[in-house]
Length: 79
Image (tube, rainbow, N blue to C red; front, side, top):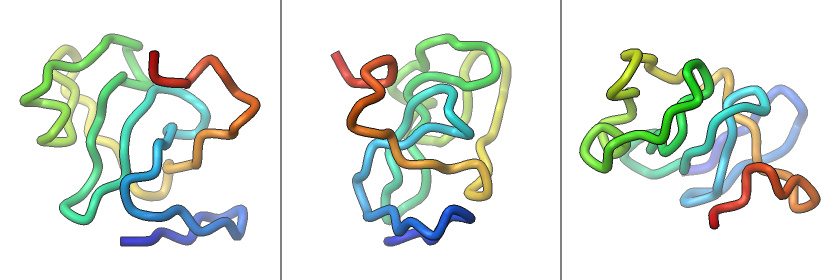
């Protein structure tokens, strides 16, 4: 799956993403994996991350909010 976002960048499958610069996830063929919620900033449970919803506040991300993680932005780097 690739996604063209409003900034004219193509985001490829399994790319690390943010949601308008917050949170962290992955863009997958089956949908979005939500690892860190952009709304409540909580790390998600593995099961809910795969489901694409926040286990803590029930946030459901939108493809319209997806942005690629920038290489120079270490605040979103997996660690």
